[in-house]
Image 1: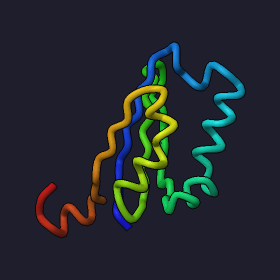
Image 2: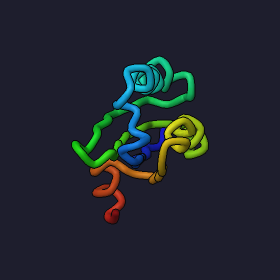
Image 3: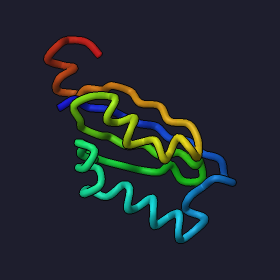
Length: 96
């Protein structure tokens, strides 16, 4: 499984947390069960307070799966998918 870090940014106007309905859909989409249906595992997630920026650390077979999973977020703002490695892997290969 490959590792990916995803950054999603949206404006205050498109923030899904403003609406209970949209917030509920967001939580459902980010559920373990739903991520698994895309062939992904969510390792960690966090929102930067007051910045409307979400970070996800995901494991999956390929970037295409991650992009498909992130399609609903792309409708509300930007999505950047970055292939990543654990610190252990970086040290083993001797470079970032």
